[in-house]
Image 1: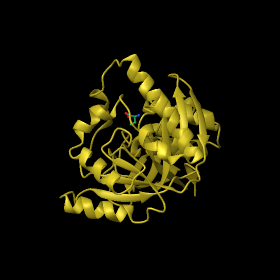
Image 2: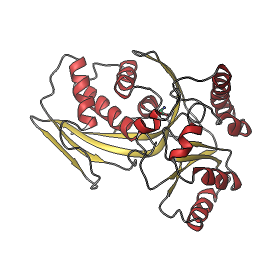
Image 3: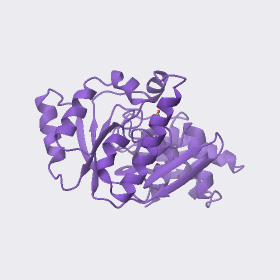
Image 4: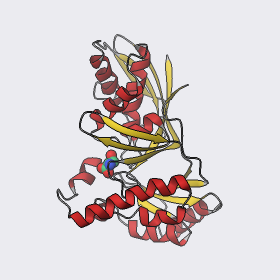
Length: 295
Ligand code: HSE
């Protein structure tokens, strides 16, 4: 039986809608072996599909088909830390686990580029799948078939503090609220900030991150779907965050914090409790530079 570790991811990073994402040291684990039937279970009681609708199974089956093989069944044991439908890449983690696991079972017929492409084809965009597979911060363009990408390892003194609400927000709903067209002015607003984000992160110009995470393509629309989000942004900035943004499609809000701001997560916890938001989780995370690995 093979065992995989797949990281959570935070996509968009503010202005880089469907283009930027990074991996975090917060993991799901999957044990996988070929079987003549489908046997899927959770080691931690997380409710997961245990039939052919399971996303790890679907992705593994896709890879087998691409390689001209038939998958008769799979034994899967999932251990899930990444909360589902919260904007931390839980579905991308399943897709990547299914693809990397199946590729391993077949003796690695597909290379990294093929896996990046296949993962984006299944998910529809590459900004969670690519960093889940590769680690680091990934800049990616999906042309509908192939992903043109750059992975950069990040060794900064930054921490990413995830404020995770106690309600779900499905990506389909969070995408359905977006406008189908934007103005030329808003396009320039976003592309300049997305470019500024990765350059500033990688060169240590952290004072740019607040401006770089502002956007006009998705966050203004999604804020309405996340009750009290504006308040959490304000509290995080009051506690010294460099930047705050909606992680992926939300509802998780992510604060980028200097590691010398030692008590940020504790202060957020205290402030959220005092504001009656005890149900929100606060996770203090670092960037993962390795992506999906076999253990
Ligand atoms: N870029 C995607 C979105 C990430 O914001 O909808 C969520 O899958």
